Amino acid sequence: MVENITQLLQEYKSTKESLECGLKWLPKNDYAKSKIEVINMVISDLEQLEQQLS
Image 1: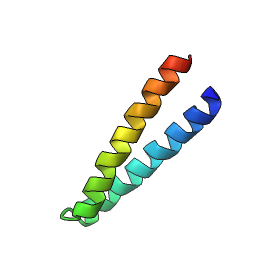
Image 2: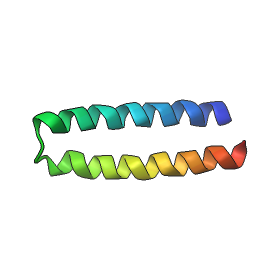
Image 3: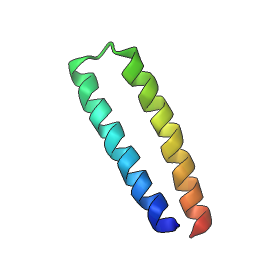
């Protein structure tokens, strides 16, 4: 289970990096900014879950 969480965590971090790169081209994109906030919350939750399971 920890392996799956780790993999999912890496995918979310990769998605966050992609959105942040896109913001360089479209800095006023509020939709992307809000998605990054949601992804940050998911990443935080997954990191906490990963620590609890380790």
